Every structure is written in structure tokens, then in C-alpha cells.
Length: 126
Length: 183
Image (cartoon, rainbow over all chains, first blue to last red; front, side, top):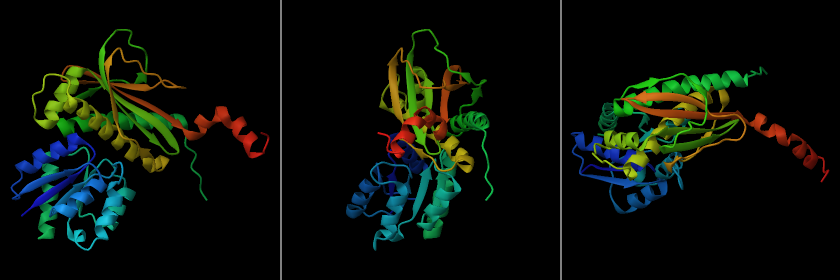
């Protein structure tokens, strides 16, 4: 089973990532969506997820706050998280890595960049 | 302690250069479409009635600013279709969201580069405005406009950037009065 959770307040980005994931041969079983970190946590409580792609700048609960919550949770802390964001400054990247992000994709991105990053992340998780 | 004095005019020139590169890179990367970038100039009223779709985004820090991506409804539809693999022919939510997201990406990338010299800035959520004869105005200096042409469609990327000290100056006497208890 490979359920992927897309966390971004941009509907367009979620739709684009869904299209890209549909083209990957990773054996993805289900793609779930959340508009912010708080919605994502609610989803995690009800549905098993094996990979997350997460924006940084989101209302209610941003991506770094979400990462902190996930890392502190006994069950969710092992789920790999790849950040997908315009926040590509060194401080943001370092902070995300410190909080346990397994990868970082800067917007704008190409489909190939996303596929490659996810492939690398899933290899590490295996 | 070494203090680096930043010339505001140099910052604004640097921001415009970053914006030109950011806009061209964003469109090419996300859509495969090449943007022809024109010369930057101060914003002027265009004088003709037109249908407009404009994405707005703001940022705050030591420097505050507003960014606008302005295009036609036809280009907004095309952008939505290219990003999402759809074939919509009218201005729908996908087209509007596409303009909002490109605004976020273009100005977010510019902001990330500017932060290396200007310090951390917080970015707002993008908003899209659309309609006929949409006028825009900022207080103080006019926006700097960078015209783009993509596959025959014209659009404008507009930048307003001001140092927080410059913005405070007209009120400086007021603030000095309150801190000394003059009120």
C-alpha cells in the first residue's frame, strides 16, 4: 500500500501534483489532499499514509509547524515528508531538514524533478 | 560590527532584475512556455477599457511590497489548461487559481533571493481580482512594470517595494510625540 497525502493550500498545486503522481510507477494506491497542516493531521488520524508532500506557507498551520507535530507523534513520525514550496532560502531548508523533512522541492518545479525526488525518498524509506 | 549600507535605489533595481528572471524561469519551468521579457518602466494608466485578471501578493519585513501578475482572461484560461491538462474555454476557478499560483511562485522566488540581502520577509496568500476596467493604485511611488509576452499574449508583472523606514518618515513626528508623552 502506498497512500500519498498532498498538503498545500493551493488547489492548482494539489491538482498538478496529483497528475504527476498518476504518471509515476510507484504503485500508489490512493492520493489524499489537505489544505493545511491541521487538515493533514486530521486525515492522518483516520487514514494510513506512507508519504507526504507538504507546502511551507499555509494558513491555520504552516508546513514547519506541521512537521514539528508529525515528528513528535509516535505513529506519524516515521512517514517521510517532502517539502514543496517557494521558500527555498537556506534557513527554511535547514529548518525543514532539522525537523525531519526527507526532501525539498522548490517551486517552480518540473514533473521530472518531482518524480526524481519522490523516487529518491521512497528508496531511502525502503 | 560591520554595517552594510544598502542604497534603496540599488535594491529596487536588483529586485526588478530578480523579478524578470523569476518570471521567465517560472513560466518556462511550470508551463514550458517561453516569456519574452520587455523593459521595465513606471506604471501608467493604459487608457483603454479591458478585461483583466490580476493576481496580488504582499510581503512584509525590513522591506514591504506588493506584487501583481496582470493578464487577460484568455491567457488565464490557457494557463489553467496548460498547468492542469484541461481544455476549459471560459474563465473558471482553475484559471483564476492558476494565476494566483503563478503570482505566488514568481514573487515568492524573487522574495527568497531578496532575503539574502534584505533579511526575512513574510509572504501573504495570493488573491485574484478579475473584471472589466480594473484600476489599480498604490500610495507613494508608482509600481514598476515588467511587460511579458508569451505566445502572443501580453501580460504585466508589477512590483511595489519600499523600505520600512521610508514608509514611516511622514509619520515620524507623530511617533516622536507619543514616545515623549506629548499627547
